[in-house]
View 1: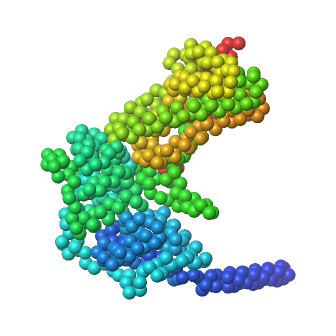
View 2: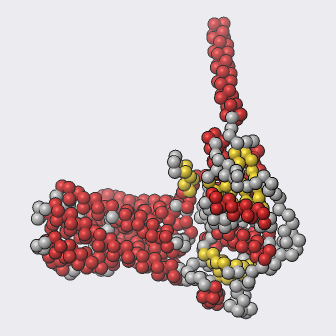
Amino acid sequence: MRFAKLRTLYISTLLLLVSSLVLTVTGARAAPLQQEAEPVVLYFFWGEGCPHCVQQKDFLDELSERYSNLEVRSYEVYYVDENRELFLQMAATVGFEARAVPTTVLGERHWVGFSEEIAREIEAQVATCSISGCPDVGAGLLPESVPPTPAPLSPLQQGQAEPVVLYFFWGEGCPHCVQQKSFLEALRDHYPNLEVRSYEIYHVAEHRELFLKMAATVGFEARAVPTTVVGDQVWIGYSEDRIAPEIEAAVAACSVSGCPDAGVGIVPVSATPTPVPPPSSPEESDISPETSGAETTEDLLVLPLIGTIDLGAQSVAVSTAIIAFVDGFNPCSLWVLSILISLTLRTGSRKKVFVTGFTFLSVTSLIYGLFIAGLFTIFSFISFMGWIQVVVALLALLFAAVNIKDYFWYKEGLSFTISDEKKPGLYKQMRKVMSAESLWAMLTTTVVMAVGIALVELPCTAGFPVIWTNILAAQEVGQVAFVLLLLLYMLIYLLDELAVFFVAVITLRSSKMEEKHGRVLKLIGGTLMLTLATVMLIDPSLMNNVSSTLIIFAVAFGASMLVLLLHRKVLPRFGIYIGTELEAAGGK
């Protein structure tokens, strides 16, 4: 017993010594890092009365307490002319546009606006510069004779501010409009001289007419909401990091120097603005933080050499990738390609297989891409009409119902497939390709055939492009972003067909698309269309966040797998056969 006590005492003493040694070594290692931290100089350009600037000031105060080596140099640019000149010089030297406040410069990086994500990026940069050092970009640019100054009393504080009229066109159910309403309410608290005239255009025809008149007079395209007009400046859409600071800067500038009322002569007194409601409480709001664009730590992914990626802002890209992938497994296009390659393989020429297949895929992809671009153009112009969302959702429901029906009763009744009556003509065109005597003749006949097949396929493939382009239009995607997303869509859309094509070129073998494969693809596509159409009718803002977007697609694919399990495994065990495929099997 005494030996056991001595052993316990010995082990306890040993553990205590090891723990003390570890703490000593850790402390010894940590101390030099704190002592040897590199000096970091941060430049903060702000404006009196800017709400986001106030938020960032509090953040920078906390950051300075955590990093004793951090020096924050702060310059008010609305009312101090000398600071404004320094702001312009800094922008020209570092290489950014001095368009809004708050603007933060640290080393070779800069940030315009302020949000939780920007705060995390600034702190990460401060930590990096504390270890490896960062250049002081203001050295030799900002003279020491101009110290960072607090703002003097502004005209707003002196009660001498000019009146400012802001026109806000919005639509009921628009998630970005909800965000901007809260922002405008906070902006009015800071600027008592600001009058916000708000007009809901989805359901009020009179307001829609005013929107079109304002666009024609001021000189912008009335294509989406929210749209904001202050003086001669216009903003379409809303974002906390770019548009909100720009609107704040415009209001501040107009408060000092005055701006014309853009609605004079356009908006009659009889057109009563819709009042901007106060920010909703979480219980009353029709959107949640996940759908309102609020950034959370879980939505941020930090990658080496690339930086921080905001997954919450990538929902459009995620939707594009998944919809394109499912759309690529289209029974119509895969059937045509497999038949064409099978006929070409009979020549035994790998060159003919490559030329024919590559030309066919290029032409059909070009026509499909032009069709999608046309749909996006149409939806972009008419997306501010509330009933368009309902019409597109109902059209998607029709495509979904027909596709799901084709899984059970293939080609019976209404069917978005290539009809048997058109197949002899397609076979005839394919034989013309095979009988071409020269390479140029083969190319020409392949192009003609591909154009004809692409037009015949459109009813079979139009469902997903209609849904996808409407999602992009509803989220106010710009032209450049659309082109990039379209390229992503077409690349992913072609993956399966390119796989079939290259396997045929390399092995000189081809597999034929069978009806049973087509049925399953119809079910998956139809279920996804049904899910997306339901979301468009209930709450389109769910597609604004990557997390909810992935859940929506997971529900769709899960439902497809459940139907397959019940239909092909569970129900047949009880002697229940639904659809022409299993009814024939059950009758044998």
